[in-house]
Image 1 (cartoon, rainbow, N blue to C red):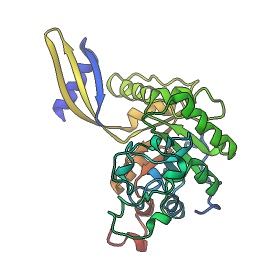
Image 2 (tube, helix red, strand yellow):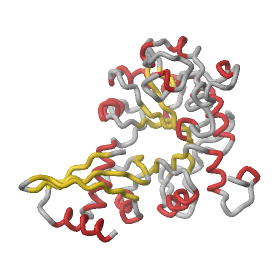
Image 3 (tube, rainbow, N blue to C red):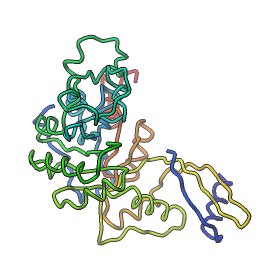
Length: 324
């Protein structure tokens, strides 16, 4: 800890160049019970089911999404790519053989939406040991999901590795508008190109880019300077704990130091001042949940909504939490 404090002191007061490299259904359920301006610090953060609930069932599939909603998830985080025929579908890896029964490496963009729907998206989750699951766990289209769950809020993560930004966003926006889902969807991506294209659509709600969020976080952490402006509040999603490499540039070379940042209340106060909403990624234990709650964040992303029921009710006895 002493060494880490010395490093931060050097970063803030010496004339150093610093760079960072990150390592890093129910149709009757309502959308989030808190509005965007809710700043009640003592409430439980909203629960976001990561990829529909990736620890509880085959990710990005309708049955898993339905199960997560029934277990109390307020928001569903889904990953969307474009099929060969330009239809937004739910799937995350760049290779279809990573999760499905395909044995040959194949990109989502190499198959039509109809062909993708014929694959067994549960193959990897169940290790190929179950039978007849291919009729249940399909690769759904974005339209399928928004129509199936018309009262559920979705955060849409754009991950298509080879999609052209304008076409990608246009096709996603068309589905959102056609299904009357503008008010219950929000676009996220680690790609600056996709976020930039999405911001050109007035009908789309969009997270701030990773670059904008990173500048605010590290500005607050290392130099105690707030770069979040009061006239441009927004939504930010980032990991509760971030592994970074600090690079110090000297006249005769450079020094590299590995560091782990766990954001504090002081680090996040800059976002509060600008009326931003914060989503913390990777909150998958009771300890992390309680810490995130103490920060007063809007929502947390969990892999298991089933386990999150135990986080939220840690002081009560619930059957599903016994022995967990």
